[in-house]
Length: 296
Image (cartoon, rainbow, N blue to C red; front, side, top):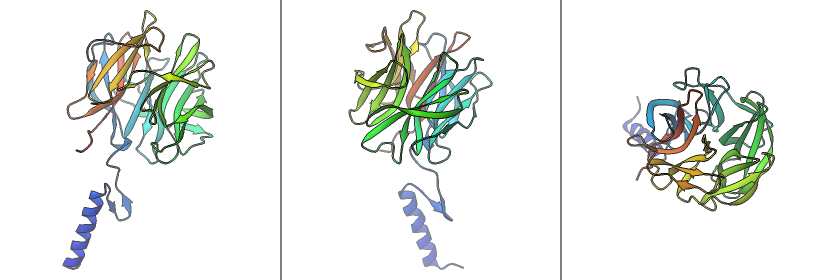
């Protein structure tokens, strides 16, 4: 039988581990208590892109920074940071029931030149292939210095091959790429400059930084093109992380905010990284990340 002193020491060790944010039991590290492992991906629906209702279903656990596309058959596929295993990296999951549930597909990137690929943005090209953009991170994704947005190409959107660096700049995270007429734009946040930057490209592979986007205080994602040719951008309030609003633009560069709030966070949660697609039946679907507020 262990002595009282042994029990006290064991209890103290467990208490200290809890205070440090992790517990080791028989050599096994407990799950993280913060970061992507604690995030979830949820969704909302709308008939017009302006009035939104929570679907009330958790689509993906231990998942962050979602990016959604509509597949040729009308089903949805979500690309996301998968933190179910460490180190976290990009994965994708597809729905066979109209977006109610998703099955991970096991995304791979041949020739990956970084420890992990995070913050995915997916583009389906006119030739049917898929181009994936991501922040190629080593170690701490928030580390200082030059960050590299890289791209990869795929025939099926699951098995990719890295094709090089799309943009290099200090502190880059969360790239979102879309096409406006004959050029490609990238919205990408700079941790160094504390704002979203705009980069552009003619070939959709190599980008050059242009200027700040000018929507300080809002976290942006890839916009949706409307029937009249304009674009609608959904963004979360970075100051509160409690609401999602929308902006409209003719050219993808100059944006005007629309009146009202598109979606509020679930009770007791923070809401970020909203991305919206138009469905084949005319409806709209939004996927987004939810997380617990930081402990005060």
